[in-house]
Image (tube, rainbow, N blue to C red; front, top):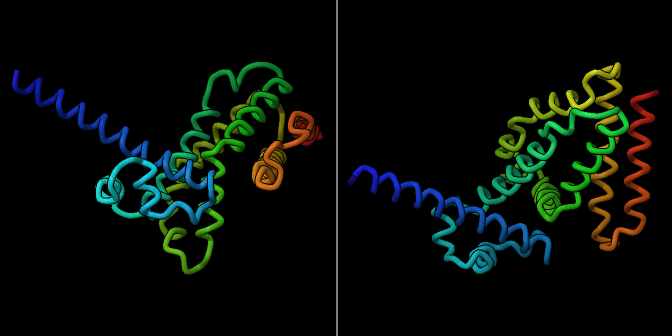
Length: 205
């Protein structure tokens, strides 16, 4: 009975710790979306999360680790959104449509916006973050492989598919950042439909 109670307690503590970590990360995402990267100070993060900075440090150590965790969370959410069975079903046109919709859903999210802000704010050569953010690249090789598999069964040269995927990323990434200037994102549906046609045209070229 004692062992079972210990296990239950341990499991409860793990869930509680996970919930607290998520609360901290969500606080950073909200702060950056509300007022920009500079607003995500240590004090503001703790206040937004509803805990003390000491409690924040208990879970992440320092602010740098929190920022990396936000970037990792964005990476994981993105990869998981594309790693779904329905992404590999249907005609080429349907797969392209599903692919663009999933990528755009992530790119216009508050999480990706926070990711972008962190990347831009810490890109300097004197920043402590770039040398450690290699962790953000973990799993990307497998991710690229799964992206290619979405179009498996169609005779598309690897080089052309790579170019097409980069084109899509650059367009949608830029479109997502444009919401800073135009939050209402006018012509969104038209632009998304156009990028689908462009991706299809590149693959068919």
